[in-house]
Amino acid sequence: MTGVSGLVTFVLGLFFGAVLFLTSPDQILQNRAIHALLSAIANVARAIPFIILIVLLIPFTKAVVGTILGVNAALPALIVGAVPFYARLVEIAFRDVDKGVIEATRSMGGSTGTIVLRVLIPESLPALISGITVTLIALVSYTAMAGVIGAGGLGNLAYLEGFQRNHADVTLAATIIILVIVFAIQFGGDVLTREVDKR
Image (cartoon, rainbow, N blue to C red; front, side, top):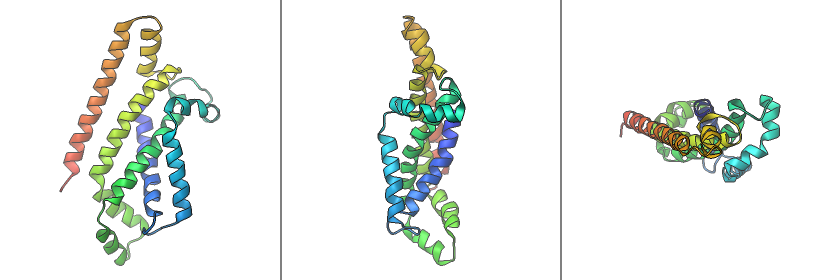
């Protein structure tokens, strides 16, 4: 669940964040109406607690996946919950890129796509990796919550086999495994960030 939703979140969040940045005031595609609409969508989606978001998306999940139980049923809610979060981190990362580099690329005839692919992403890559690391860790906690409503995974194991059957050792084991996964993601993200950071 974390791997698939994390990959989709990275792609969609990068696109969503780029549009947020480019349509903001004083940027190359500035458009107050579109920026305000996208900002509102991002803010609302981030403000809804994940467990409530799962319930709200049940009709959409059933239409797309065909069921509201299992790993696949958790993916729509995980992606909808994580994309706006990562998109904001992408927007913040892009804002830290030197405006002079962007202007120089534009003055040489660089298109919007060139600016995004050749300037914004490479220049903000350490921040983008840090952002997706934080997002993946949030997704791990989301998957644990999704497990409580039958999505499977470690959350499901901890709740059904541990809590409901009064097996504290199962709950503890599931918690330890989740912690190991979180520490592994953070360690990998930190190493990768240091590798790509040329400052």
